[in-house]
Length: 381
Image (cartoon, rainbow, N blue to C red; front, side, top):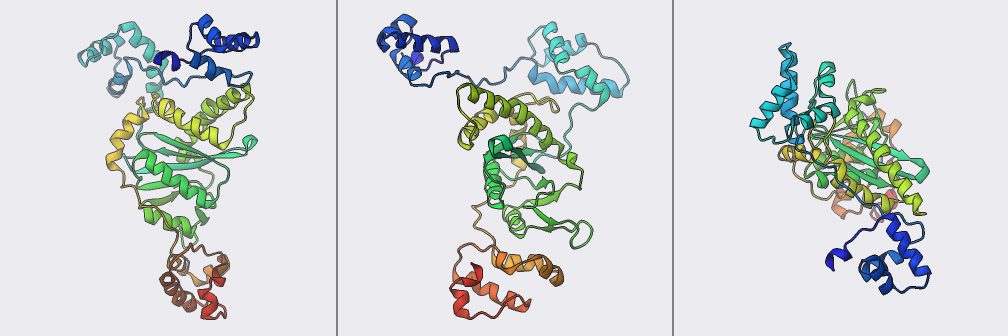
């Protein structure tokens, strides 16, 4: 009975349930005729017309996968030595390592991943960044659904995190970062971005390579312990790992989700997208054999996690003094680019305001306000 209750029916079976119920049969009789439980009939009877059942299937593992890195190493070494190594030799070698499949299956998998062709063109396994060093971050937009997706990809393992949102405000960006860190089990030593305005205000503002970052985001980075790194203009390929994942996400997940939901007369929204994308990440995207590393991202993430920084404490917002310090390096630049009324200050105790007041008076930023006005919060509204 437990098995029957957990059954997932195909489209034909669901249509048969609907048909028999319309004919006037009760749920018990429908269950008897179809050889399923009454609970299963009741479950599918509630679903809307046109419902198409789907099953999230994890990538099918095969017995060659664990030996792919060793096969690649043999091919690359042979290339360096300028010799050809036949597949029969590779087969004999991985048999000593525990491979118990056939030679033909090995040949098919090598063809599937185009190992010989790729080794002629480039180095197959590339770890451009050390474990735990970098996380690449990007937004991918889905205007037809009024959604954006925050995407973070670890540079070493290629493990990725995705979160659907309905805006790209800085508060949303910070929250997505915290969720990504929790998903990966730690914080990378640096995070790489393009020129998104919520991260960088002005490039080379204080000299070559000395950028003016959004004060709130810069403070958040310090809180979490990671360094900020931005791509050079018109060089988005610098963060090519997350860009390639964006393509994979759009065509292998998002578009497929839209089709599946449309077949059920549903639309993509922030709730169903986030529910489905987490299952896809856990069961498919991060468990597939990555075409570059030829290993599963989750497997490499387990190697990467000991090199990550510890998870940060919850972020309470920027301290007023941080804003002053970050922009007062150049007072003239401060006055041109900063509006005192736009300084972000969350709810704080009076001690925080006491520390802020001397700084803003010193830099000539405080208009004529009484202390009563300041204490009442009018300055910050």
